[in-house]
Image (cartoon, rainbow, N blue to C red; front, top):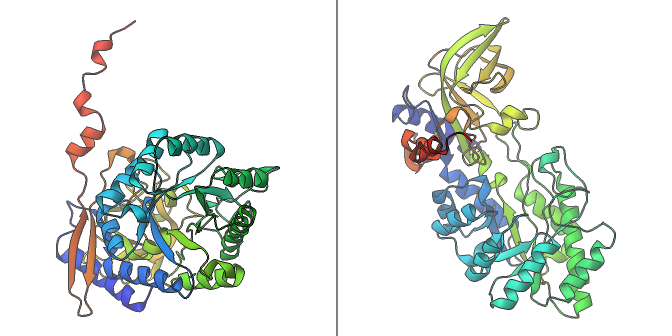
Length: 444
């Protein structure tokens, strides 16, 4: 993240207050830096640019399941990696071309597979049973879909177990190092001339680059063995997943896409010689730095001698941060009521959310300028996942999300990306239309 991006964020925080996007009645919103999204996409495309391979970059929809965001990314040349019918519907609503959509999920139903094959989107099979289902579907109706097999290279995990997908016992893909697994994979390709991709994904946050590169190397070596056994280029595409970790400790973008691409060129040089098309599936690393949650401090108090600021951003937005703070810490900026940095000596304090349980804390014993009632907090690096994995605790509504363009002169234009969830929408989700459903069942 450049100093320009930091300045843009500051302008946007102040403008959100000045333009009444945030107010006592609207105490929490999400913000996305559109210029920052453009810059992140350009950095990715430049890092993997020719000479050599043809690359399709897809965005992991789970990281920001917002139609306007996907529409913007599609306009910049990106596709979509989807893992559910809902994510596919969002990608289609955003106008992502079928040729740039990849379906990944460990639990695809027959209906999902049939729809994907009918649309011509790429499918990565996760397991032998899914491959058997695909056998029947491919035999029943011709398809233009590229079809691959997801493999687990079992190269190990990173510092966050839940984000590590290439461990010995991961639920994803064919475990390549298990007894007889590679032989089974080679037979699977030999028996299916239409199986033309290999897919792997080592993990995301907490996974070091060398481990990611080792996973890609294993997939590449497998593709080479498949093609050698077939006597032709049966595997034409390598889907190397995404997973570039994000630095949540400062505005610096590290590691950068070019760091990973440079390592891949050194570790797997054949990846870029033009014999294989490449697919990537980055998510968090594209959007995290572009997002900010802005929330009001409703009250301040003290317990056990420690100040506590009660805000409107908590587990409903920062679910991972609240439940796994050591793995998912967030930077918190203390702001005054106008959205400007709070002035004052750091005071150790807790920053809490609105959810009705004691652990709803965004920051514990964090040294910050002392927050007061009516001040604001900004949660930084929240552009990925924080706006698409809402936790409906206490029936708190999903907040509005705005994109912004901030000019060097400080002027800011906003565009609504997602409206705040209404009470009526909350009631609909809660079964209000079926309010009498249980009354007629009676007692046994």
